[in-house]
Amino acid sequence: MSSYKQEFIQFMIESDVLKFGDFTLKSGRKSPFFMNAGAYVTGSQLMKLGEYYAQAIHEAYGDDFDVLFGPAYKGIPLSVATTIAFSKLYGKEIRYCSNRKEEKDHGDAGILLGSKIKDGDRVVIIEDVTTSGKSMEETVPIVKAQGDVKILGLMVSLNRMERGKGEKSALEEIKDLYGFETNAIVSMADVVETLYNKEVNGKVLIDDELKARIDAYYEEYGAK
Image (cartoon, rainbow, N blue to C red):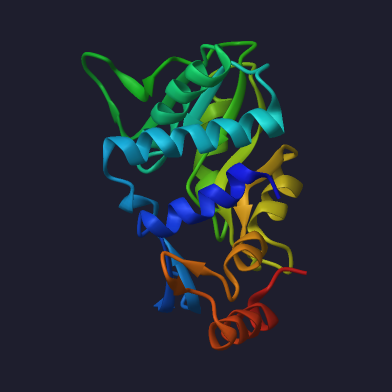
């Protein structure tokens, strides 16, 4: 595993983004872990977050793309922070674009924020996490409606590795449905490998008991 991936896992813990305990997800599933990207709130956190995303995107897609699209709402700061980081780390000016939930009919009118998307643009979509792929049902048509564009892929921060609507993971379902690559900075397998019976700031976060609960969760909900 790349060192930046291990650093990212610790960064999620230190930022109180990745938590362990008892959580009820929107799907109704009872999960022993939960990720909330809304907990990234400070300047230094967003700067680091953008750099981790930029490294993962560069590793997966290179720098031969034009636009980073972040779906509203959490994708907006992600796309902004990552385009800044991409310029800093790789010297490549990527444009950011996001959508509004409600189309604006005056001033800077339309459905988009940031850069417009035009014919010939190559687009990477950025999100925090996806468990069902529902957001792509809204996002892909918005991007495609802007012209003759190519979506290279999707990057999320954490692959939860659980079933989406069928037996495959949400990321695999998105790949099959839309035909573009899907990637994550880290997976839950990476998280467990990094944290199991290892101390973080003097505390073991994934001990034998929690590891057994995570294993049981994947026995029931894990992707095939």
